[in-house]
Image (tube, rainbow, N blue to C red):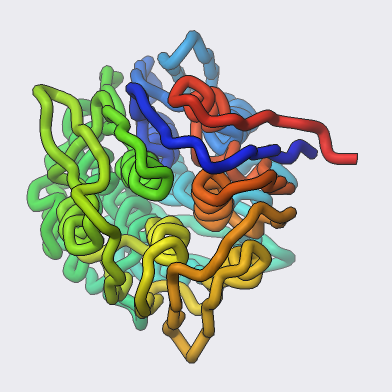
Length: 420
């Protein structure tokens, strides 16, 4: 395993290209299983999760080819079950269930593994597939599904903590080849769901309403190959905006979508961060003194849980008291004790963190626990003086394309080193 050695206190300056969205490309890759024809996906980020999904598709019998940021998949002859050890290790792999069931009318998929940030059960996925006519059993760590033919249905996918993004994707993909009309109520509204719907429509699906709480799918007999470009990663963009503000620098983000980040930018403006358009790019910098904020994570279009940790890294630098409340995952404050190693004053009270910012901070060794926590630790390390070492950065490689290289181009003093 590698760690990231950071010599902080240097403002970030320059331009950075925002990569394709991890949370969009994984279900889009799964959707290629719905057709025997060739699909071409562009702006595919070079991430360990993407490579892992490529291995899963290969284990199902698909032909998978990566060339730069272009991915070609031809799933002409596939089987209804993949490698158990591959699938169980990545939660996102559960999104192959809907496409396999819809095309082959049966699927056997290992239950996805747990997640450090909290439980993410697939009950809503299975509820939606059952409503379409699937027979489902769970045996020996596998989800086994069969159906003589899927049929459209009215499905409510709201959960205890709001809509399910992957569940919406799974049911939407399954419904594309079902008989009749499917209506998903309380559907996830994330841009990544819209991107998947756009790809499916390019394949010949008939989907409307994506991006709203009600999605309608009219089933078709078959889907064909298509080409598609993945949307830019809104979480990566937010991470670089916050890093620019934390280091008191100025960063131009090429290819970012401001319309996907309205809640984030609204809260950052309140915090004293300025984000302005410059053609197709965004420029991020401080607009004056940083100010404390109160924020609560919510389903899209609310403030995303995937930016909570990064915002906290900014707030430990900000004089005053901030309150950050997590309403999506029950265990997403594991970065807190690590940030406290730098000298931060953070108290966890139920679902909220009380951050008393502006305390004296200095570099220290820290350990990453999950993808977005890793990004928060890196941001903090970039901002404080002294040397910070962030270990277990394989988490970063899951969701940030060559983050250390991008940071170096912005002037950061970072080095990837093997852990001893």
